[in-house]
Image (cartoon, rainbow, N blue to C red; front, top):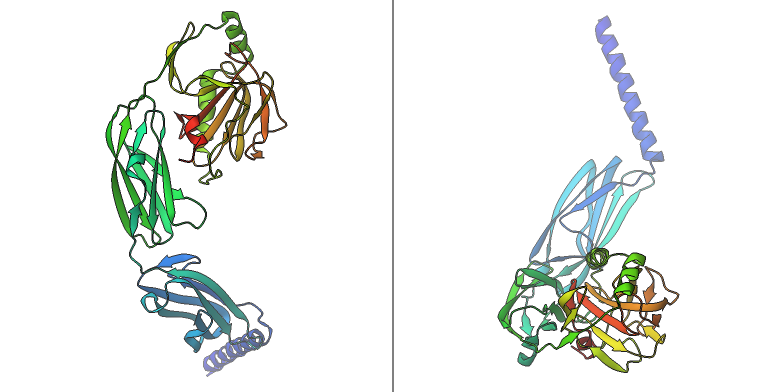
Length: 400
């Protein structure tokens, strides 16, 4: 009998404690329910039915849940739960709603006196349209000289997730011609020593619901009649410049790093400026040059003659990524235009008031024309690289 009374007493104490805690939680709980939506994330794309689960818990108990589509259509309204934990599966039929952007809002309210509430609105896209792609590059544009850039354009019926062009075991990104455009483009650099032949560019396009279309397009590399040039440099000057600047190997290392860090963002638009008040082109791109210290090599830039110490400006919008002195190039500025497209300005006498990391606009000064580095006279060595492959800058002064 004593044991029974003891057990009853303990049970009564537990019941009173539980009741007191429940009463306290009911009146004084201010924490909102913890809620997780599985199957849908913000700004995601979907095709077909979306299987979702709304789940969560509350320190007191969950009273009800409401789920709205596009703020007007109730998928569930004031669904009664009355439990500490809940799990509610539901489906969004994207095939029966308009294609494009939608909102999903959920509201979870607890059963306390304060009716604490958790609510969130997510945006998503219904995309049940088949992916359609059409090449819009003209046939004549699929013929490209050595050292130039192959420009491929195609149009889609909707915004895509990504597109990649594969050429000779290398990959190049494709991107919208302008923000929001359905015309996409890819620039493929053709090295000066690429063998003249017919090749295939394979473009894989993927939309936001993982539909994929592949375009295989033939293009032709044409031999270019590069000129020859013999140049004599002051041996003593070359030695002095090498001692006063960083090595050519260091420049290549810096260019590799700048290319790797180039943002996936198109910062340029339209044609590039010739970056100085040019009198003449003294060395064409790809000229086979002979010098006493380098032997025979391809000069993969253009040398521009202009008034000594005259202004040199940025050929396009971009960000300054290199400002340094190298033995071969002297005072050097490199501007990144995005997507691995960089322009280089060699042999400057002085720098303008710019620093690495600065955004620079097309036509803004980068320095003055000089003859620092391995230069036999005042001129600007203007070089451009795409994915660290040297390309003809003069091609970019036209719309390509």
